[in-house]
Image 1 (tube, rainbow, N blue to C red):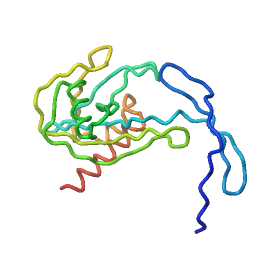
Image 2: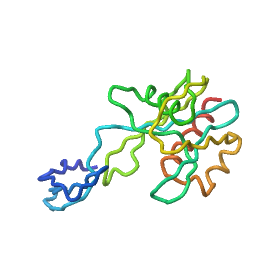
Image 3: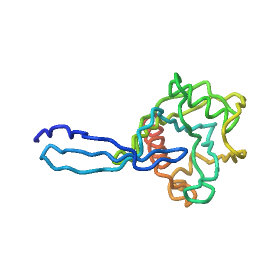
Image 4: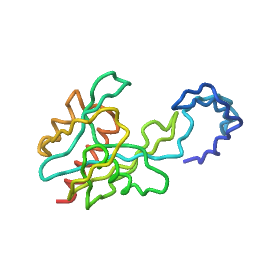
Length: 183
């Protein structure tokens, strides 16, 4: 297998900017001499976490409004990591903000990046168990609905039309494999 030279970034400019994101035009020179301009969302300095809390035989999920799809979506607790936090600390904080529970046990499962062609947004997926009540103030504009979903119905959840965000699906497949291999 031939090893390609690293693509060279020649220039980066701002193509568009809003209150929450910046689109960059990135001029590239590929190893074969080809020149192209790609657009990307400016790389974030923060990673994110997604937490899969298991309480007994149930997954704890949330239903919250997603402006991109203009509807309520079923998913897992998630959010940006704060400066200096480990993924485990961030996961515990997000659970306290979104579902009013902290966890004594948090296990790292994997890290994913959903759209590396045009953005860098790593998300750490973690499993949480052994809960205690603890509520922290979050940034959600309305209370999130807590949904208990039976672990025995994971396969049904994979086909639920309310549950179709790619990161949630990857997290659920990761959890399913983890549970199968930990028996």
